[in-house]
Structures are given as C-alpha cells and as structure tokens.
Length: 344
Image (tube, rainbow, N blue to C red):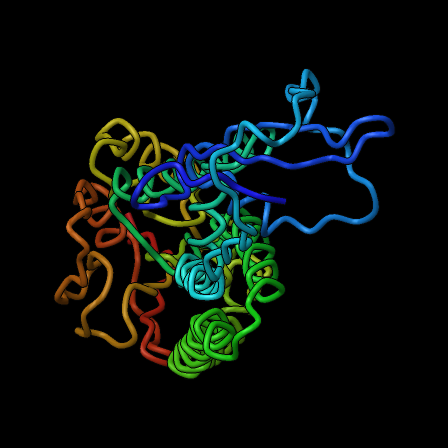
C-alpha cells in the first residue's frame, strides 16, 4: 500500500491514497481513494477479523493504466491512533463523581432524566414528597411520626439510586473510583444509624415515663363512679387503659385549638353535649406535673409549650369544669377531677 504526499507538510488530512492491485492479464490496477480528516486514524485503530465488508466500492472504477502516472511513492506507515487511556480513566472518575450523594437523591437526579415510564414514576414520587411538605407547612405542626408517609417515596427513590451506584461500581475499574462511589453510601449509612440510635434513646425515656404515668392514672380512676372520661390534653391512650367512654368525639383536643379549623361553634356544641351528659371523670393530662409547661391549662395555670398554632377558645369548657367538678387526687403529676353537683 502506497500513499502520495498531499503537500510539503505531508499532512494526513485530505490525502490521496493509492493501492496497486495485481491483475490477471495486466501489470496492475491503480485504485485511488481520498482520505479526509483523521478518518485514517479511525480505520487504523478499528480491529478487523477475517475479510470485512467491501467498503471500497466507490473506487471500483479503477484506472487500468498502471502506476506510471504516479509521481512518487513510498511505503505508507500506519499512523498511530491516539491513546484512549487518559480519556477512559477520566470517564471512570467522572462517572463516579456523578454518583456522589445519598441514594434517594441519586435516584431523583437520574430518574428525572430517564425515559418513560421510569421518569413519570420518579416525577410522581417527587410530587408526593412536595405535597407532604406543603401540608406540613400549612397545618403548622411537625411531629416525628408525621414523616412516616415519606418513607414510601424515599424508599423507592433510594432503590433507583442504589441501582445507579451498582452500575457505577461495575464500570469503575480503578480502586480510587470505587472508593468515590462507595464512600457516600457508607457516610449515609453511618449518619442514619447514629441518628436512629440517638433519637430512639432520647424518646425511650420520655415514652417509658408517659406510659408509666398513664398506667398509674388508669388504675386510680378504674373504680371511680360513672363510666365516661374527659382527658384534657392529648393522651388518648388513657381512654383505652381506663376502659372508660370518651366524653368527646375528639380523641385529641388539637381540633379545638388549631387556627383556621377550630371555631367557637365547635366548642359550644361540645359544651351542649356535656350539659346533657357530663363526663364522670376529668383528667388534666396537659403537662407532666401541675404548673409545668405543657398544653393549654385547665384549672391550674401553667406556661404553654406552643408551636405558634394554639388558639384558645376553651374558656366555656373551663367554666363548666370549675363549677361542677372537684379535685380528688393528683397521680403521677396529673390532677383528677370527679363530677359533683352542689346540693340545691
């Protein structure tokens, strides 16, 4: 195979390449092809097995006049293809960089760029999370258990993200690239485990104390007269432990103290129900002890642990309890009142 130099600089771009093919009855056949740009590089670096497809069809109308019309020829040296190692290494690290982060975040980032229907699923999950956050802000209260519904969309997104991490690990040949992929997963796992253990230890003491208090109060009121009970505050489990009938349709009192929802008419309706059928027992479960900060006070004043969403329309209910009930005991910090009608 011979090539004719295209100029003084002997550049490889836009050169004419000739190949002398021996014929049966003629001295040879000259085939001319034009090589543009670095197409020769691509052909030289492409592996071939056996006889490849006939790609020289445009050169079949060859000149049968032999090679005499060529000015000067010399053996052609196949140009070396540029090394792909640096690019591949950079690509591997770039892929590892794109997988840096918590699995759920990786799942969201890759899902929004995926094809349908995967993209639609990820968008729906993100809408789920966004709607939940909006509801948290609107209602104004954020307790830890309110975040439980987020476990479903975050879990699905984490699965998508872990799949992306697994693909990156398969592609990453260098140990450094693998470390970049695995490190954020380990950090996320350690932080999550530490947060879970810490929060559980902090909540355990409080839950255990509240459980013991409710059991003691339930035992104290078990044999008191009447069958109905009003728990002032937000401890509905006391109804179940005591076996008494709730004196209100509200298991919690939050519906009567939430701005934008509670109304004076709701309080008046409850007062009318009490007038017709007074609660036999009232337990002030609004704080851990009389005078300690807690829920809106009943008859014993206390500071309010507020989240900025406390609407106090409860004075008619306080007056009802004050006029018709007497304090008989305080058990585990919770005052207990029983119904008592003064003699006429």
